[in-house]
Length: 254
Image (cartoon, rainbow, N blue to C red; front, side):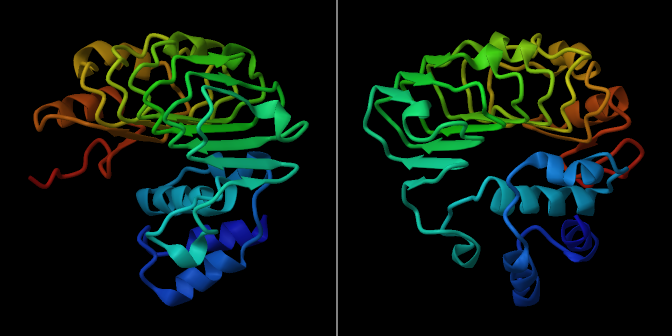
């Protein structure tokens, strides 16, 4: 816990252009559960700390695989271990996660372009699904009682967002680039969500989703696509939340 807290205190930026900071991040152990950093999530975070925490999660919890920071990432390949399953460009139409590992906690599936159905085990704490244009069904999604980190990104045929309503242990929710996401009515005051991303979801209307967002009493950071006039409106409605890089009362740079 000390190591993660120290990184949060010292890392100056998200881009990690400083080799010293890259080395510090490389030296941190893998996070096998978000529970390991729960005290950090409960802090009154400033924007710099929020971005540093997102960096930590990307590379040490989600085990991000990217060419952008190749030093921080494993190669872009399928990885299967007892606690973590990463599938890249799987060609199946149905993916049963349980066939890869029993009691797996973290699953990341990217560019499974033929996949229509994901079958999920109840043990999941993290589920990250990205670039899945044919995905329509996530079997068991509404029963993932321990799920704390959910990404459904670029899933152009998926519509069953209402199943998120029962996932009241969620801390991180990323629904970026989903053209069928037309409301956030599934969010409730029982949700524990700290970070919410809904960038490039063209059917979302800011004025209509404000009541849903106001139910998230623990929300710290919201990334959302906005028109210029909508940012002040949203900041006033959510004064405790950083929206992009702004908080209520900040001077907005145009």
